[in-house]
Length: 80
Image 1 (spheres, one colour):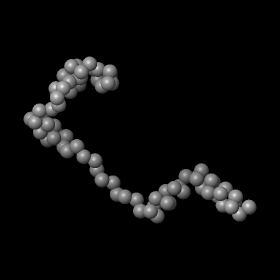
Image 2 (cartoon, rainbow, N blue to C red):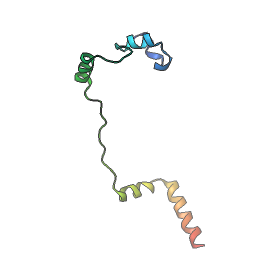
Image 3 (cartoon, helix red, strand yellow):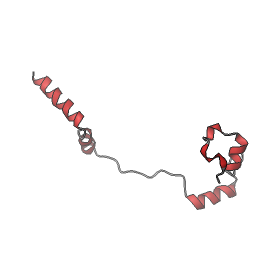
Image 4 (tube, helix red, strand yellow):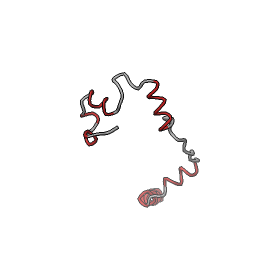
């Protein structure tokens, strides 16, 4: 795959040029091509990331110094 049109964005390329460079057709991959790609690349999936607990999420909100300054200013405003 690849060629002279590697630097041109996909949306700017002609359909016939694009399908030829990607070795496919306008209707998609054949079953044989899909199985080959699956063997080479693996499944098209997203890795699960661990979820943040509510306490960790609250802690992350106050990691920025600007947020701490604004929170401090809000406390002073409430006191006054």
